Image (cartoon, rainbow, N blue to C red; front, side):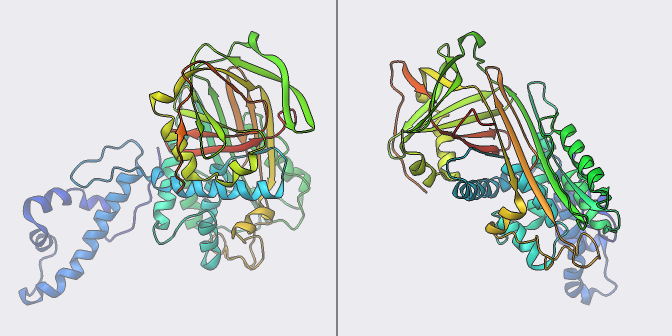
Length: 463
């Protein structure tokens, strides 16, 4: 269950458990006078404002406690219906595409695969220990508008999101986590320890960076264990003057609603570019209807494949030679529009589907990439005084690695970190949807409306 941090009041939040009922029966004035009778009736108006503040704080504590419970019922008029995780979903999606476009611009013609959610959660957690401009840079770099979304809402959103994703499920397995490896010489502030545990379920790990080899093994073993062996050798060559390493991981394993028979997978051509053709094991499915559409204004087809248990994948196939044109308009709004349209029955049609069986990975030095998005905390000027009183504390290294396997049964993945369109319906006779050229893909959590993974497959034979 998530841990809720409630504001401290002179009496404790439990003192206000019956206030909503009392105020509905008696009214605010009567309740205030009953709780805090003034010595002089002439002072009632002056004191009533002062007496109102602690009561409101108590009610705020109750409100925060209710929102922190992922499964708790909400009652009464005006109850908040939008879950905390859905409140932060738009910002998380915006960061996902900001990071994608940055990586794509730096690595043209290469496979891309990463978990934006894993990175966002790790750095939102780090923001708990940041102060001043560094605090603002982290959250704004993660695409949060701090005028529209308060810091408590951000952390409560991640608390609810991580709790929902890590909930045991017999058909779908998702594990998300973060870890801070810190020098043994650091004395951490109690508030940072408490908040990271309460909101992110994370605890720092002490590490002896003078023993570079031993600490490297410590970090890699931890990530390997948490990702079921999918992520190995995450970090290497740690400097002896390192004082902090931030790692983030996510493990996902899903089974297709409609698996593909292994006996129909055959080697076929995949056109990497005009001059490069490789052989890939191509899966074939013609037994079930598929959710797909062709976009008239954006030259691509979009396929939706569902996993058992509340997740789905979107595969975006640009028309030949149109990858750059599709990438240019690839935004959270476009992804939401495609997802919404693919809920309609008119886009469920018979099709001969060819999809490659492949494994790809992505490895990224976040300390080199995130400054380009405004997160410039990898300098000694960064203010991380909320983590420790030690001066010049900095994140000296940050890495993210993701791995994806797609086969006939489903997907196994791990990571250790307005446009108006007119659409064609799918043809009424069986068409052919063949992913035999570079395509984009996203793995989505339907429960939290979150992008778990995002990527581009240029050459499925390159891991």
